[in-house]
Length: 141
Length: 397
Image (cartoon, rainbow over all chains, first blue to last red; front, side, top):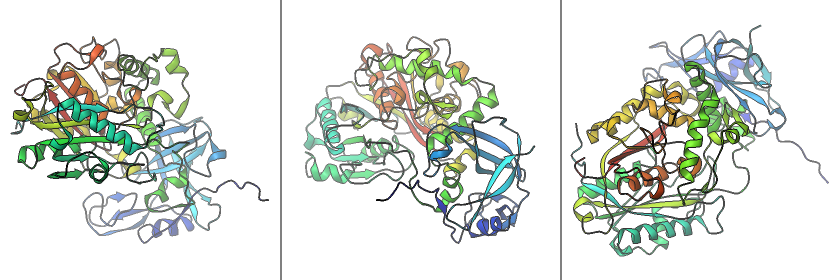
């Protein structure tokens, strides 16, 4: 007889386009794809720059600092492995490097202390079942 | 410039299956029923249909794709239907949204590719909870979203909605008025899922949160069913029994779009205005020419964005605009007169098209806007994708 094993959160599968993001996270740095031609940051990464269409894109370390662009309090399970985490907050973080350069994050709880525009900073979490590190964001105290 | 095809085509038949949560019948059977009803309503025989077009989308990411069960393709209709062997033109559309399919149909009619186009949208509703990301891995862009517990459209819409409420200083409780208005209209629509089920302000305020600030009643009601329309050229329409709903204008969203989470980067005015303007320009019309607006409400917040992007009110004004009976059947801009996806049921904009047809042909029963000359139907969200059309009582409106 087997007992119920709660599902794990999805494990990221790095590919040629995204490997630089996970390698940087592994050394505790947030990196975003950046265009050498027009200095535009593109996220999620693409082979062509989202600003000018140039293929001259490369990973660039960024400050990891930003502001809350918006958040939503999740009252339902949306992703497996997050069953025990409801309610939690889905975050969109606008990095300081560029307007509307948005990365996702999540915070436990029901949004206490959150407000649009509040400053946040990156930190790195372990991912269960993986050696990868997940960049996530927390409020700057 | 006004479109050369303005007033040259029309919808001449409407058919619907029942809209239910889960049907005992397969989706293919529901589509066959709705299409047959639309052909009969037009006063045509199935063998008259020589063009077919549909938008066979899955109900959610990762759903099945069995033909006739999870979706209904043009091929299914040709394999299993009562249509004759002489289909001259067919297409399946995956660009824009639902109205993109009849837009293709119109162009096929005008080009002479065919004479009578059957268009349908069939929507499956799987049993059980389906809105959960159930994979052990996150590949592609999901590396940057599912890993954070972010995978569903309602989360994206909730994030955008909070941004809207915050930017313009609104309280989410104001949305009750819009949602109740749609419910009231549905109580006058015997085809609606929520027919006979009025909603009070307390019902709205007490509804559970899904992704705060979106509550349950801000989300459309998922249903299973099909609605179908028959289109033809204006000259051929004169011989048929129904008043034609002439097609005056159309447009598709062609704004630069970013994928999924990143589509929030698009400004809804910047993305939606060019789309709406295409509809206005092809028709040679503007918001003042519209007596009933059917603006997509997969989430109630999308209707706000369309009200502003299409110019019915100014940027940031929509949640105030919908108050005080302004969008009621008796108001200055009757809105989602059939109940919308919120209260008729989620057919991804198909209900909006059918209602615009009804309103300009005096077929909307108790919710008829007297003398409605023009009705606009826009689907999708300005932040994502979309398409739209204007239907008119007269070919030269």
